Image 1 (cartoon, one colour):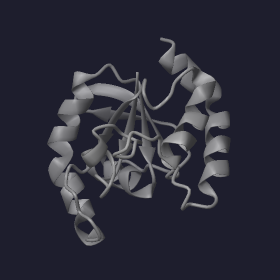
Image 2: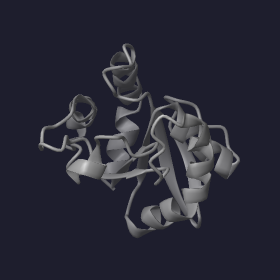
Image 3: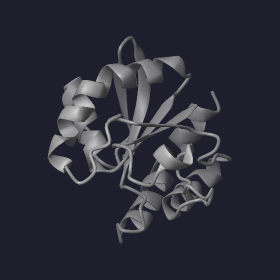
Image 4: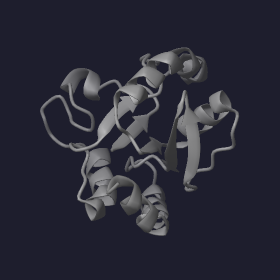
Length: 159
């Protein structure tokens, strides 16, 4: 019911582990732990949610090409979205939210639940701050976002 959307594959992320939010050694990463903190109130975790990257390209440190890669990968993302029964997309960080907004021609704001249309399907999108521990304020800001939309999220995933 929930699809978590990252921006692009990380150097040592799921490309090596085969599993989102896990290290190659099978250990849950700090980002995964923080996502689980946000999801636990809904009886969800990173294991029970779908995951994909908006960009399918590994861009490494070449962040300048990320926007173009995301846009070129949009048809693949749309197919992934349409294959699932997702009623809520949670984007991680500013970039996926910004690019989805550009592609769809809508304004997307971090922390604001919004209905969007991808192809012929409508869904809700909740952009949050990236849950990485590198972001010092993201954890608390994300808790506030989830608390603000708790009832909405519950009604979406329990449908």
